[in-house]
Amino acid sequence: MFPHERVMIRRGPESGLPIIVAVHSTARGPAIGGCRLKPYPDWRDGLADALRLSAAMTDKCALAGLPHGGGKTVVVVPSDGSWSRPAALHDVGATIAELGGSYATGPDVGTGPADMAVIAERTEHVFCRPDRSGDSSPATALGTVAALRALCEHRFGSPDLSRRSFAILGLGRVGGAIARLLDGSRLIVSDLDESRRVPGAQWTSPEKCLQADVDVLVPAALGGLLTAATVATLRCSAVAGPANNQLDHDDTATLLHDRGILFVPDAVVGAGGIIHATGIELRGRTPTEALADVEAIADTAGRLLRAAAAEGVPPAVVARRTARPQESRTRSIAARERRVSRR
Ligand code: PHE
Image 1 (cartoon, protein in one colour):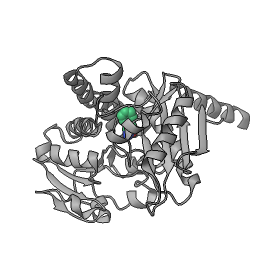
Image 2 (tube, rainbow, N blue to C red; image 1 turned 90 degrees about the vertical axis):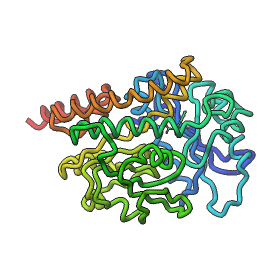
Image 3 (cartoon, rainbow, N blue to C red; image 1 turned 180 degrees about the vertical axis):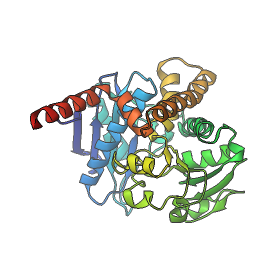
Image 4 (cartoon, rainbow, N blue to C red; image 1 turned 60 degrees about the vertical axis):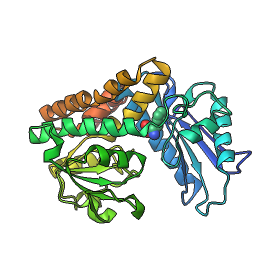
């Protein structure tokens, strides 16, 4: 079965760039998911990313208990900078307008609140404008730290983060904010951009950061970094970060589990931004209430970790089952039918 409800791909009339909007699901409510502006080797790689990322947003919304489904926008931009940002954003806005409210976007890799205001010149369906809920990264960082507290309580018997060591991979808007929130802890940090050094933290290369001997690795850059090859080299006890789609493949969760590394799925850890933005813009939450909603990620993460431990399975397995009960039911029926037909 084709898993996505709707995927739009077009050459943007203003920008000439590939504009890709993937709506994975509206079963729980209108789809939401950020707008990513990024170079890819080929537009098809951008499409593959949009398909994966939009499905991950469905899980993220479901696990956060939000009445939304998952979507994502990807604009494949030339790496030499020869493109117009306003034109690309207008094309995004016009494409989203055609979806009539079944999908709304927000900031993501390569975009921020100012870009959302440009998209809003073409559609109402955009979160995080500077005059609305604004930058979502502080909330994403806060939610990540809440998840880290739940993780440390579960794994080390105390939610006190100052006693722990962390390796933060990626110091963009979210990763940088996490580093500031963790300034009482032992930190190893890295980013491709050397100007993002953090005072008081040990700076290292991305490769060394990934393999750092720390309590928790915190991936806060691009996805796909946990593969069969990299998992074999990890020296941390746990992994929990806001980067979307950290596992290259669902089965990699089992490799982590077999190595005794506790992996908290990014769909739980990274939900702070959408909880905050939709709370303020759609549900009338005050800023204080919205931040309390974000802190509740600690409860969600704690429950997930306890349920997974009780069953002896990776938390990612429980998370997927919780987020897509329909799918796992279909899978178990299919498995039973296979068993029956083999008899
Ligand atoms: N980048 C955000 C995420 O992946 C997308 C987003 C933020 C969407 C805020 C809507 C509002 O969760």
